[in-house]
Length: 359
Image 1 (tube, rainbow, N blue to C red):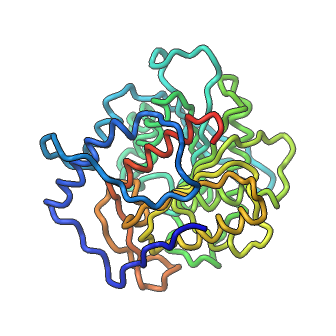
Image 2 (cartoon, rainbow, N blue to C red):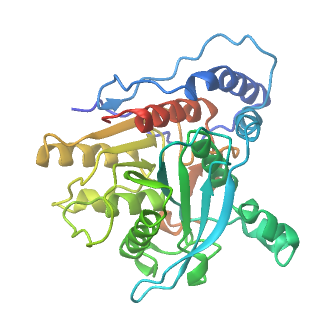
């Protein structure tokens, strides 16, 4: 049985002071070497141990800048804006296709691939996209308009030898600004839609000659992570001609629907990472989902990582803040923002999960 989660705070979180940000940033810098080194997973199925960082030994540096610097220090991946064939009743999707630069890795075998699904805020930073529209920069680097989290993950993954496909489920449907502020019951783009998009993306990557179809990873954040759960649900039929997913990763999904679905089962090993203080998609529901799945499938490989004190979007670099425009919370607000220490710990766990021959 998983341990009890720490209670969510009754009051809005205290925004870290400059000194607090300095300390967490310094700790993240020191821990980043560990996070970026593959390690063998040798921990229990549910982990709630707080991260204990080493004593700071370096000059102060902002945590967000330090992680971004580690990404930009390596060779930029090659990126192409592609169009996925339209599925019946669906629009043709645009997607961003990242591959390691020639010469950046010794490429003697086909590449593993990650299909990455964005959250409810959409894939594109609309402010950046508007400034670049119609310019040569839009052609030279189409990925520059992506939200920073997705660009950084694409770089992080290609550094490890993965190709990455990021399909855009919202822009082709006129929702480039996202759907976070739409009521859940009123959303035209639901789990069924996003599952169909994920399956279309899987079929597209399987047709690429450089890809090892035995090593396909499905990864998502928030609403995209909920789509990951829907995609790998073994109670739903798997379309013919669609390659299987070797393993899946879900960052802070909403687990409520899957918990309420009494026949939800896993089709593939799953790593689920979530903040213990998440007040948008509570970790308690994901712990309930893990218990339910393992009672139905005793051999299911469902790894749940809970980061105490971390909120929704802990793997990003934005300041901790409260959003009151989320329709699902009826104006009460949700807390979102990065947590440098939890981010480093999550990257280390993700690295281990991807590198393990048997997750």
